[in-house]
Image (cartoon, rainbow, N blue to C red; front, side, top):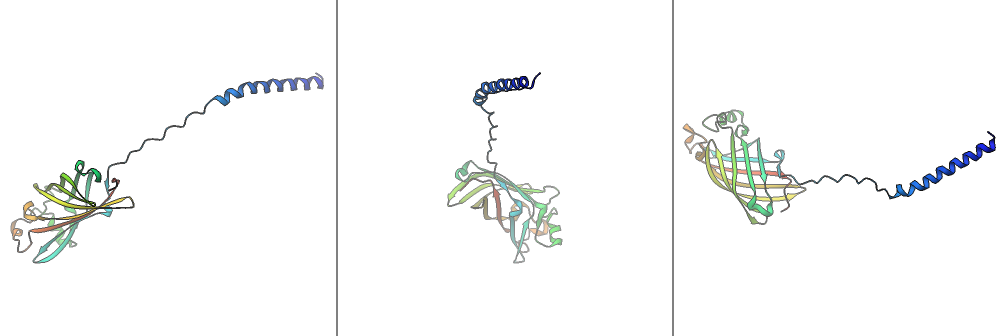
Length: 211
């Protein structure tokens, strides 16, 4: 084969290839790229307690002197929208064995049968039966408080404040320890340990809808 013939064949081959590309190109241009997968639909989860930023405290008087304590372990299940309070539900559970007043000897007494009797019933609970909006970020929670198998109705005022994605619920209520058999035997004497106990709480919550 002469060089002239080889050159002619190369030019012919390039011409055929170019024509083929011209025919295919429009079809390729009309082909739509595959659609990107749809982004997953996300829904906001239920409000969740942040125990490390929360506190449940109590105060009572012994021989007329105020004594402060708190519970180190507790949790909550929340289904609550501030704009539809009546449809909400709140359950709070407290590990009674986590009670402390900062004195090891007294803390060891608190778990015994005369006091919290934690081996028999280790947990106290609050279960809401009605939630009511009062306006201005204030609410009222009515529910059943259960300690040592004793169940009493309580009404708890709650104030909500929101900042930086966290809702803080604060409030307090009074209870009678003897209503729940806390302090039996010789400890029923209210001149030694008063019957009245003030409970205070600060609960940090994430995931709650705006006020």
